[in-house]
Image 1 (cartoon, helix red, strand yellow):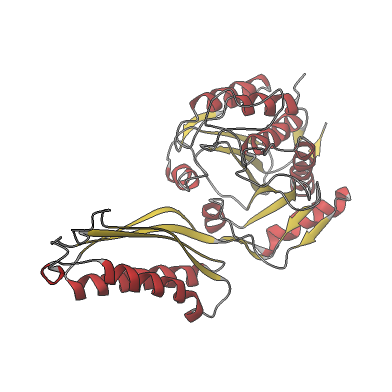
Image 2 (cartoon, rainbow, N blue to C red; image 1 turned 30 degrees about the horizontal axis):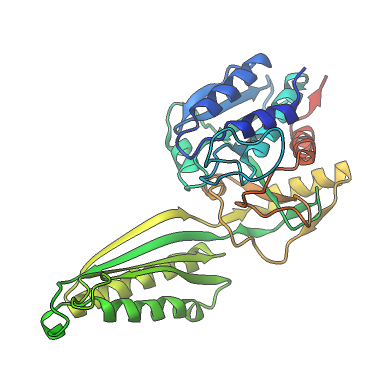
Length: 375
């Protein structure tokens, strides 16, 4: 008898980082086969996909869960703790995968009356690469998808509360590293150097001020690191690097913010005769919910009598489910992990097992409402 909680605990013991989810893929695929499915493996890296089809025309739905872990050493005290030092499921992707596996088990015991349901287990969410890689992989036929659904657990909200939002659910974001390189000189003759100090200083001020020039929605820029020269009193700095995180609840505003950084950095490099190197890391678009998909989600909450709220503001963190929301009408939602639950990416975090049943029932209800299910 399949137990989704024990399945989650098994995944929790064997966390794997983004791009390395080989064992996780194997466990997921083998479990799906015990339900009678023929999963596709190795999609977009280590992704796994199952498509359940009826013999009648109808809605084509997709449900997604992520599976990768984080480079954090677990400190929680429970029997299913990570067995890999320095790696843990600190974001709950083990629970998200268990939710989708719970849905797969429920569907294996019923008959889909019309349309189709695709279950997508995705790798590499944490680095923003997984969704793009899966969508670009021609080893699976996406076909037409009418609606896509996914969720994330959210500490700080009541346990089991469904968190909905129209339009933007979570922000676009990226890390950006700007490196200026000049030439060094003796500190007694600084005028003979090409010094990046001025460019670094002025760009830092500019980056912090850019959000105030963009009036549409929430826009943020956060300086996270600065490195300039070497600890040597007799030498001027040859290079300097500034790292920042940019984010916005609007893809348009986010693109404008990124353009501002690129243009200003290039201006300072040209002005001061510096070599410029810009790298963008962990880039995510905003996750935009579709009104009709959101309506289906809320109707399923009402059918089940689940507590749900409409968030006034989007989540500031990012989600690569955004790639699916760009491809198909989608609804991404949160489920409260408890008001006092340790935050995401905390070494004491552990996904609340209660959410597995809540989320899989909610997914199942959407399918009942749209496609019909019978024993």
